[in-house]
Image (cartoon, rainbow, N blue to C red):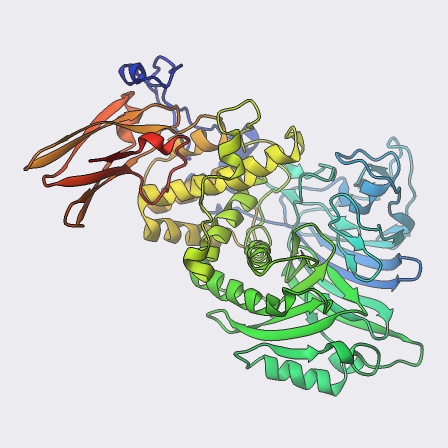
Length: 635
């Protein structure tokens, strides 16, 4: 949405969907105005009105060294960590902000979901540049304080532009047993480590430090960084993780490594570890002290997660990305009936998205079966529900979580404030990918979804809202996933599939490794498509207006067919009209959205004459019309 000042037509608000509404002039949507802090970034040259990152754009980064040990018998994870934080900003940082997301389980922490078992992260050592610091009242000059999941550190000296600062931590926590919103934890067999270490907050050019606590509903905002991680687990336990395994000879038998080599060139699924091969000496090497340390490294990722179990089997195959090959791993318990197809679903997802978006850049994509209700995404790895999954259900969830590798793992939007920016885009590509894989067996754009059950009611909430301020999880999901994906589908119907996907690809290319805000997305699409789209963004994202188009009349003759269409709702959208003739031929035309933006309520289009059998509005269902009963006329 380019920054502009202009007068818009002010019209009488429509209050009825009766035919008389066609005589009323409509209200025209105002643009969504960026907040002052985004405007300031524009003036500072870090953002632009064309949707490109500005010449002065920057992001901070860090290097993490983490050494952790998992003790399954006590569900305890202990770790030491060094963060080298790089200040690329033009600002001197007087304070450092660190997220301790395990503190969502700490007694007394604010949260949106009741938790029965308190927990939280215990810090036994905190150092800045080798100097120990202690928790203290905020009035002290040096030290740290913790509020909920946010740790604020006042270092001995400011971190100047271009400087680095070293932070050291020793910490431990007990993994939570599966429960409400279990993004991490254990079910007693699978242990999944997520949000498991002190992580630097994002300091960006728009808001400075991100100090939003983790409250369970809204998700995360993270910087890209480099990681060097060692995790010690019992022998016989397989580990799937973000990053490249740096010491395969120390943890994997030669037979397993040979099968992995075969998987790198395979068109089919390779069994790397079968049900009868689980355990030390077959799935993993054996060790004198009955423990193995797995060493992973990852560059330019926003997070690291790991899944481990001694119950896993392991499948692998390869996916072509357009710029090379990525290994696809699937770790799962053998009684999960749909999971022998998981690696195939992972391969399809990587290849489909690499073709339609940008090439997948990482060396592997790992699917870890576990205890979540659906799935949860992390760089190069996702945990997915196992028990009771159907093939179509597992495929859909796998595809959804792998789209997240692009949004927000690469294109690092601010998920906490703007959930729709990643979940809406992910839902769009999930629906399109399901059709590409299953064909007519699925109808992902069917109108029995949550949006149509809430649209136009008091239960609907606009997507343009902070993730923790939705009145319910249901309202969040409908707004951020379903409705926003339908906005993108409507944009596709407006400009055409090829132009739409070219613009989507440009958005991904421009903002990979960076932090776009909504106005950067708006500006990118408008720049690439060469048209004003304020009416679309505002209608879908900032209101609960509904779309309701209707065929008012059809006047058919031998030489022409005249179709009158009424705009009975408040959401302005183009109208696609198709006529089907007795000989099976069709003709199509459209009414531009400009007709409605001029304040009109009715428009007439002319199609070629002939014996017309059917007239239909939006036959491909690009637009979310809440009442399609009046969208079809038949002879």
